[in-house]
Amino acid sequence: MARDEQLKERWDLLVDKLSNQFADGDVLDLDAIIYLIGIQELGQLHRKFKKDEKVNLMHISICRLLEPYGYYEFDYFDEQGWPHYKVKEALPSLKAGEQSVLMKEAIVNYFLEAEFIK
Image (cartoon, rainbow, N blue to C red; front, side):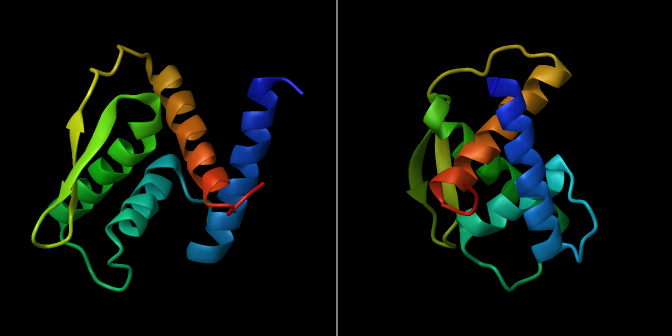
């Protein structure tokens, strides 16, 4: 199976599984999944977040997702338990479609590593 086909198959499986678990079957988009990963990485699962905190959750998620690609490195947890990352390498200039594919690949790898999907 071609790499792109395998990614699409795994992505569709992941979206379906997460949508059923967290959105009562409504289809979660890429941003919603990034947000969920941010909550998971923060570890504060049962609380409400303010608008600026939601943006920070997405940032945490993106840093964590792109860490294996060498773009970010975990630095420390602050006094509220929020993880902080430092930039190791600037992200390349990517077109919107290329960004989407990179993020989907990183998300699929994240959930494969966590054994949420196979």
